[in-house]
Length: 438
Image 1 (cartoon, helix red, strand yellow):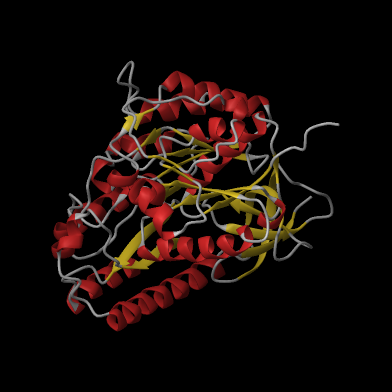
Image 2 (tube, rainbow, N blue to C red):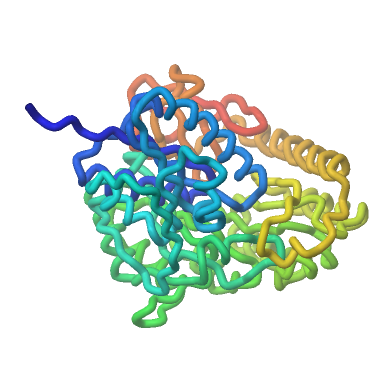
């Protein structure tokens, strides 16, 4: 009788970096003969990949672990917490949630393989740092998409912004060798992928460890790979965004005219307390330079409201930047203090109700901007990378245009995995609607 295969389920909280990490974990487990389950109820190993950037992310994690603890009472089940909260909380997770068996930081997830193979009975915590890059074979990554792929180029951050926990959960900057990145991109091209998304906490500080070649050279090398049609990258830090990066984006056909550039605040006083390393004027100069090179570029950003000491005039400066720049999308958050950060030692002086009101105002303004800008796209035809059928609207196909906007569209055939022309017929605040042209 053949041995029953282990079934695993991965729940991912957080950013694209976490999603990419989960794809790697899934690929490693597949190599042991384990099978991915569709639901946690069908798994005997559950991996929870965590985000610690905001307090709310941790709250969601502990709520989810509570549900898993109830599931564990009914059946044999092992639970692993990996990622940023694992790095931050370590042994504390075992004490808070007795249902957790394994706790592994971002640099320690490979240990999950031996724990699974040996069917380890004891609780295990590993949150040590590695100063060197540890390569994962591209063939071991179990990707969620057949057409668009994450490619990690660096990890960690050296900026230590006052509010940000990333240097404490992801460590200091370490860069992946250029040759390894290109090997993965070429492998993706051979498999039919059309888009790669280059990932890192601060990609524009990238330097090849062997040669010192900068991020612009990485972009040129990736753009030279035959078969790859679209290249995106995130995240960029304004203080490291040099003019030559803008010139490379403008000069390389395959690099999408789309950029995520976190602002965080439009107030110089707040930016200084945040330790961001640039002023509002310097940020707007970058935007002006980008639009002079690429008038059609799509821009997105991050905004934090309610940072300690943020006054109403400070907040209004952020609002004014949104009105001036007209971002295609934003990610907006209420400030919450994170342990170990410099801002956690400041008085959290803005009342919760004021933070909520400011967040609602920011989001209402952005929704209005997106509706106005989307209305101008009706009647236009644009390239869309089709990712498959829509989850909420399976009668429609869904994809993203070069500006990274969601486009849902009708098509007489299945265009999944292809770049297609879509004629825009309608719009909402967060997506466009259209018809595939012949």
